Image (tube, rainbow, N blue to C red; front, side, top):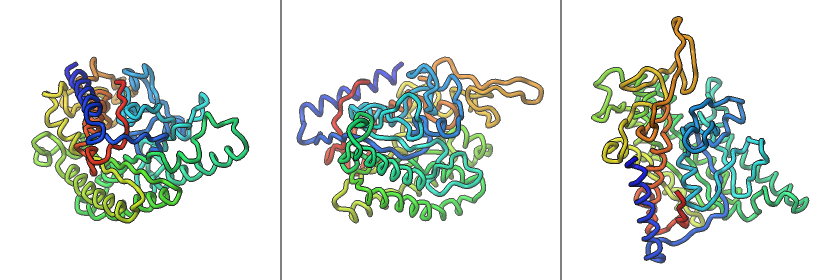
Amino acid sequence: MANYCSNTLVFQVITLVCLLFPVANCVQFNYPAVFNFGDSNSDTGELVAALGDILDSPYGQNYFKAPSGRFSDGRLILDFLMDAMDLPFLNAYLDSIGIPSFRKGCNFAAAGSTIQPASAQAVSPFSFGVQVAQFVRFKARVLELQAKGKRLDKYLPAQDYFQKGLYMFDIGQNDLAGAFYSKTYDQVLASIPTILIEFETGIKTLYDQGARYFWIHNTGPLGCLAQNVAKFGTDPASLDELGCVSKHNQAAKVFNLQLHALAKKLQGQYTDSNFTYVDIYTIKYNLISNYSKLGFEQPIMACCGFGGPPLNYDSRIACGKTKEINGATLTAKACNDSSEYINWDGIHYSEAANQYVSSQILTGKYSDPPFSDKMPFLLNLKF
């Protein structure tokens, strides 16, 4: 597949640059642990563990060869970034099966989560505030157990990891996408400052807990997700030149501008900390814009779904599920080669797309500050 080859080349070039110019371009930061907060874009099994939901095959078919609790056919952006930092994949906070190790960090992200407190109709009860509260308990429990002896040290982060570790965030997409079901475009925009106040409150709590290194992903072009195109893009006038819902993407841009301003504000406020803002929106929109050049065949249509072109998405039948509709038994199946698709199931990206996005994040060009100023981790790429 062309995009896999090109991605491998990108990683090799980055590594070579680091070797040739170690001081000027690749100041090395070795984080001992990562603590992640977010939604399905970085959930490694939290919602499945919490609610007992079973993600059926073909989820996880590419890398894990079975459903792994991730809403993709394989690895997520978070997985690729952990690999780049030479750290193991993060275990979900609530996943207690298989003696999980939290030595190198913990993942609190849960699919369906929002920054704002969850409503009664929410997919996930684990809003950002709840995830932060879970972290506070996690840290307190770790310190409590460590005080009793070293028996569990190989499973728990060292005390100084809480200050030296990297705190990653990828959340907010569901706040915006969900709002469009009940609010006008102007009302969605008006809600953004309130959403970000909630985010700022969580960041301040983590800072008070000792966090000093913050890595914040902005939200992607949610108007390009087949789910949103199917629901809100029935009028061609509502779509942009790529076939994405214009107002959804515009709302994401407004959200991202204000999120970026908040990151800058926090950097000025907490001068002993480091805030890295990552422009995921631009990376993903560029991918969709140039999908063919990058080796993909389908920019918006889901690989795993039902209904066929142009979207292959039916909200009544989730990927891997079988339902009887109007007397017919229907199954949402996967396409033959998911690496040709940017979108996996109408809502989430394929592993191939996640790998490409990760390769662009690691160039440092889409971050503020850019990596040429402060490289946030040592590139030790194995994929």
